[in-house]
Amino acid sequence: MASTSRDVIAGRGIHSKVKSAKLLEVLNAMEEEESNNNREEIFIAPPDNAAGEFTDEDSGDEDSQRGAHLPGSVLHASVLCEDSGTGEDNDGLELQPARKRRKAAVKPPRVWTKRDIRPDFGSWTASDPHIEDLKSQELSPVGLFELFFDEGTINFIVNETNRYAWQKNVNLSLTAQELKCVLGILILSGYISYPRRRMFWETSPDSHHHLVADAIRRDRFELIFSYLHFADNNELDASDRFAKVRPLIIRMNCNFQKHAPLEEFYSFGESMCEYFGHRGSKQLHRGKPVRLGYKIWCGTTSRGYLVWFEPSQGTLFTKPDRSLDLGGSMVIKFVDALQERGFLPYHIFFDKVFTSVKLMSILRKKGVKATGTVREYRTDRCPLKDPKELKKMKRGSFDYKVDESEEIIVCRWHDSSVVNICSNAVGIEPVRLTSRHSGAAKTRTQVHQPSLVKLYQEKVGGVGRMDQNIAKYKVKIRGMKWYSSFIGYVIDAALNNAWQLHRICCQDAQVDLLAFRRYIACVYLESNADTTSQGRRSRRLETESRFDMIGHWIIHQDKRTRCALCHSQTNTRCEKCQKGVHAKCFREYHIR
Image (cartoon, rainbow, N blue to C red; front, top):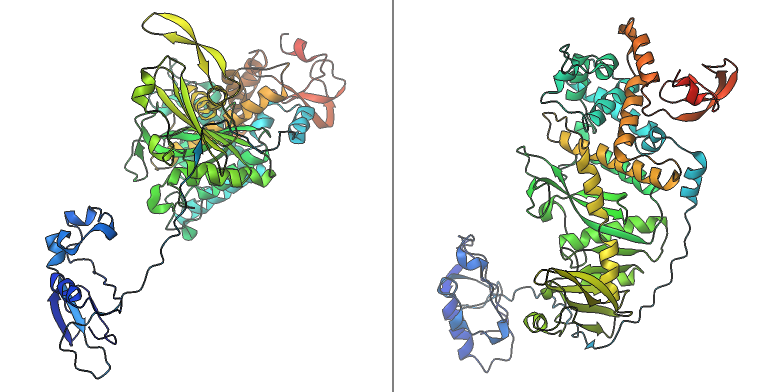
């Protein structure tokens, strides 16, 4: 072949000076000219039918394959030859060198050694002044919930809802007071639900709920709920499937991280938001209590406080980073969010959906500890005992190896089944005895348990605890819009976080999750009720709620008012009754 030739191999004819040949003929011609030292590269363009079955097959090792082993559809594909433009006679085949691809740097294989890990992370010494400040404020359940649905968030939702209604030629004139009534009804629907939400306002004695009926009219609630909106439709990002709720996600993530307890241990996993509509983002997850809906990536504390969340959109709309899969990329995003509060030695726990030796290496370079179960094909060929061989050994047996260069350990432990665990921070020692149930003997036996397995089992369940709290009393009112169920999930997550802070800040007067939600719902519905159309009902509402012994909380007020019992000046009041009451008069006022 002439060295000055320009060779083109493409699809069907696209040029006037094109001479076609078969790829097999080109390969034979190249083999005949073995004396030619010029190196030529050939590029085969995709066939017309690129959806053929052979295009999904792997070509294998290119260095060990010969032309005769290529599929017949490729060998007999047309080859286009074009004149070089140099004025020479190009009767023979002339191939244009394709653009050379850069070869990825070949990394040396990992060296695995049978020894324990030697981590070089610093110890956890950070304190949390923000939680101490919250303890000093002695916030009520409503005050804790409004750390997340704060005044800025409420006003933002009001403005976007009014904008959307105006775009639909509807003068909604929604106020913050009415929006809080809507939130109160949504929260209340988590523990009091009807087959139809309109039954809250029915006059029938078996369904009428005076707290809801006296707070807001039925038609007004339906109108507000149908126009509830969280983004400007004129500024939506077409590449984001959750663009209509993206501003709310950003605001809630900011508030969740701002008030999150600063802890060493965090969990990362998947949560599900129930949804049965026709939206394309829903997924089927067989391993979750909620099997069909939106999958949400969640980072939580070990107790279940939601620190960061992001709805899953798949790899079509979310591009993985750093040669990781989508799950590993989400772990990196969560770590980046944590490190906005400081580069501390956090310890992240996750399951085999996310874990890989590559991810452990990246987190180690970021100064973050990580531990998780791992699938065998993600261990970078760590030479551990075969699972079948390990199953024949005594329960509690284990094998482990450490990567010499990056101090990453992989351990295979025989429990009721064989489990693989990977970590960049915790090793085997100390090995402890743990009690495990034996199904065959129907007794509990003592088995050996490596240290990283024990720590993983203790700290990994944060996302599961959050899911459990949300599932107990989740918002049950749904609308026609696809994101209505997602809004209920956000409200439930904010309530869960507020309750977690309540457990930390109010250790002497803790209430359970149901009482916590009931208190917020009652205060929102009573203190934000529309009194202009209640007439004589307001006196009845005040009388009934004063003595119900549910959700009354004494709080500080800036302006001094008269005590409702002794009529002297006081700077405290009942948050639910909205009456000034001394601390010494508080109990007597609510039982007289």
